Length: 200
Image (tube, rainbow, N blue to C red; front, top):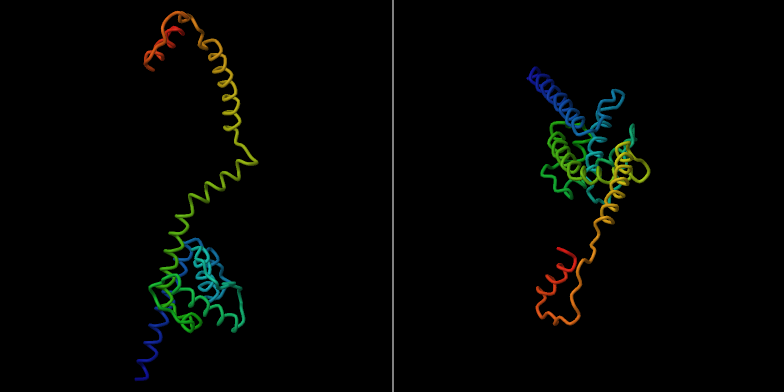
């Protein structure tokens, strides 16, 4: 029996380290690059990633998820409790307890991270177009590209050319309806008569 426990613990440790590696890969794929920093503890990487995902999801919560590296035990407990309280509000299908985060139970943390990363990526895709449009608008307020300046010059020349053409070819009355001619009753006849006066 003594031999069985170390094997189980070793296998569990291997599974935990595999899940940690998968969690870090997921966070990196989502854009949380602090997961690469070697000086951070696994707790800081995972909890920082969870906090980042929740913040990225733009989910309206009344909880302050302020994450600080190398927090005290009290701060870690408080933060993990806040994260766990937010997950049901976000309709996370996976259950997670604060002690599982604090105890670095990566096997149980993994599905939650997977779900959070998926939500974060979806949110970024939804927000991407509006953010891009807003950034372009802000850029164009104070900057212009060479193509834009060239377009404005061509536009000015084109507008002046169009105005000249309009001046040359503006409508000129060629004929005038005689005063003693009777009034036309139908609108179609009046339109046709007016067009004839201008030679159309």
